[in-house]
Length: 114
Ligand code: AMP
Ligand code: ZN
Image 1 (cartoon, rainbow, N blue to C red):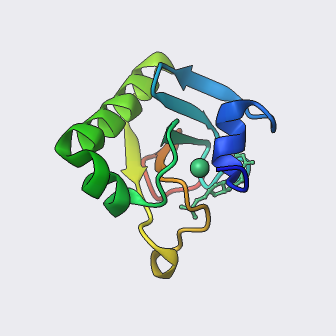
Image 2 (cartoon, rainbow, N blue to C red):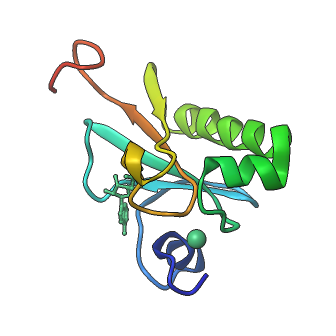
């Protein structure tokens, strides 16, 4: 979709710091990190939110997105990490292209600074 910021990142028309990529998924650094390590894992094909991806692609699409997150964590040598997804504006979703937040890098464990 032309007006979708993450589709534009996939197309390369706006820049991103890529950390993992395969044929159908892309992971890149969040521009406003909420943890010492904060990546976004997205399907390259546009879908608005996780439930739309589930409706269109079922368990395979959901599982493959989760697998892409695990592969991103392995490729970037994260030890422990948290996966989060906001589904809908009421839950804090701001970008309506399905994405997983991959968060890590806390020195003393999740929830503590630095
Ligand atoms: P959400 O609130 O779950 O929709 O998360 C959207 C995330 O996208 C936020 O954490 C933003 O910081 C991030 N974001 C927005 N624009 C960009 C961009 N151009 N490059 C990287 N991350 C972005
Ligand atoms: Zn999109």
